[in-house]
Length: 483
Image (tube, rainbow, N blue to C red; front, side):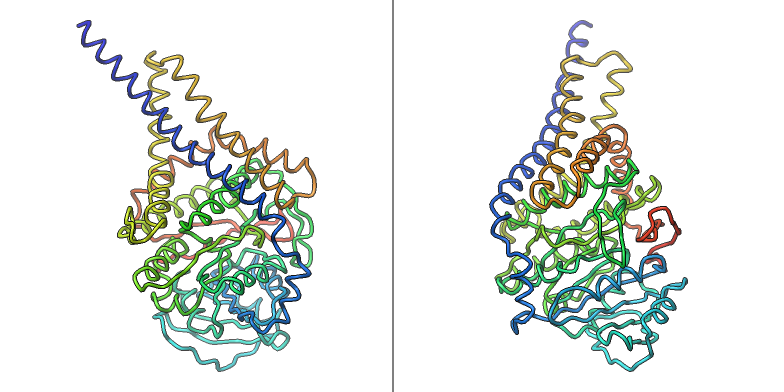
């Protein structure tokens, strides 16, 4: 009997050590990429060209023209601000294609009326299969602004429609609830000018909630009132300013945000455009990696921290959980569809560094966290909790996580100085720390559930707010690609 109890105690102790080790690996990985990103950004901050140098490039004949595609389904609340911001970018030559994916609200009507649009015959090369188009409109005030009205087919289908209608060699996708900085496209296009091997580039996506938007431009960058939104700001900073910088420098960047990215159109067509999945952004980048390696094409996928696109984040828990559910399903589907890359040295660091990172840290991470939290609670209830384990678990899962958020906010303030006051930065750092007290556990459970719902292709519901008024809301339903 005594030996049995001793064996059980040893087993429980080993399990607790294993839980601590898992949390140590997860937080250790995030810490490493944060430190790496800080060192890299510190070296590159003085090397980046200033705006005057970039504006001089607008006269260069070597700057490749860009097709900006904005897929939209029931985006009547935000679409005008998004498109207005896009029409005011600094770039030598571009076109804007808004793809109305069978909206049932006033998205199409508002675009036609505001931009004085008229129907026109514009042929498209049907290089990628899509649902039928119902009409094409062009603005009489902005001749480079077009609307393609089509039957509902989902976001990937809308992007593929834009791909068929686009005329230029670079393809830029932005979300219909986003505002792009005037010089963002110029900074991204500059990368394609200086690096001929570049096939895809992504910029920073920042949280619009709380900011002041005037005349479809972000005029003041401020932190929002909501604790939930501030937590997401800290998440975005940790993801973009640390995670993507490190993965990019390691040649293992596997995702470019669907809210803002630029791609070589010829390679997009070569792989058949966007695949029908809720994680079309990550899936596209993975398939580009595969195609270039399989066809011996020298290539580079790069993240540029300075170009900024502003987007809304969920302002309520229900919308947040739907979003994270979709992100996790997209992650699982993308990794499974491109599983040939996993641990495969043929695909370089993308297969040996990027894929394992997303598999173990991002995909299996929620499961490991869930096991850790549940075991902590059970050990406490049955009085089997080792005091040393309890202290270390709290320090690693809570305090360390808080430090990571604070470090990400500090890194952003050092490099880009977007927030106009130190008070806002401190506010984000402090409120963002609440992520590890309830928020992260809730999101981990939702992500764990969604891991086993990968066959669902439903986008769910989200809430959009008027970009010029944080208090004005209008519930909409984004793409339901079960339709």
